[in-house]
Image 1 (cartoon, rainbow, N blue to C red):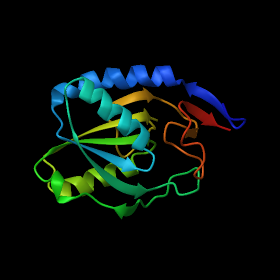
Image 2: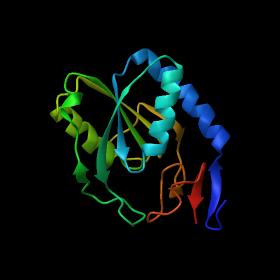
Image 3: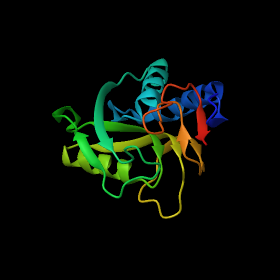
Length: 171
């Protein structure tokens, strides 16, 4: 643990929840996993492997969206750095992100994927903060109701702490 954090969810707890939601998602037959960069890449890798263990083998695509930058509060506008490819057209998409705060990033990603011709979209996040007034929610989440600014498991504080194997409250 870093001096600037306290663990909320251990590596073991995360692995158990990822396996559980993979078992719930697999029967829905997604065809492509689309991870939102940068915060969703660690969770996406684990979830894609857990789905493969359920005999659900997905293609992988990425969207690169930015809503936090180096701040601890999300921006009103979500910046698009790299959008969806033509490969999503007509496909059932599993959209993956690390944290859903107020939902602007997920909502923007869904808008982009639908505009690119996705047939359907289900969403999975490691953390759904379940904030009142959120503009989107996740279909699947490992954990809900976290109010703190979090780090680890792909999520950062101004670029630091993404590589922590657990999710912690940033102090």
